[in-house]
Length: 250
Image (cartoon, rainbow, N blue to C red; front, side):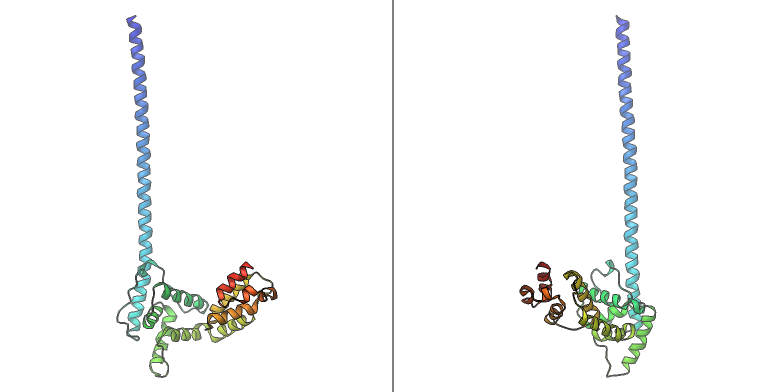
């Protein structure tokens, strides 16, 4: 009887030890898993820090390039220091290297930047634009600023003057004349309203036309197919986007 109890006790003891050993192994595996997970988190944090550091360095390089260019150009426009705009270091600045194929895109980018940074002073617009010049564009500006400074009747007092000079050099008047002709001839011709309007809108921008909203709406009405043109709901609209969205709905 006693031998049976002893045997049972021994089996129970081994069973308990087995369960304890299994639990220990489970805990070890959990610890290993947590250790690996922690290592992955640390690696991810390092990668993120490196990425942010690289982006900040890239932005700093762009900002320093602008500062360098402004120092080279001197105080032609009485800019005593590099303008400090909130958020500038968090964006990619549009540098222009003097390639005529890239000019139109650059012009739109720099004007978007004026709006984004809420730049209203013409001297600051000019300073920021010139600060983005690199390579041959910077050489062109040095030449042009020297020419303009010796001719009192020619001034670059605001962004529009500088933009016109840039267009004359890198886009050519023919580019904008062709866009104006395309604008005048742009019609729906059986296309969807959206397709027609997107082309018309692009031609408005690329042609550089200075027209008010009512004149642009007249362009839109004129190019519509006959059925849309005669629709009274569309004809009543005198604002461009109101006419566009009304045409989409009819």
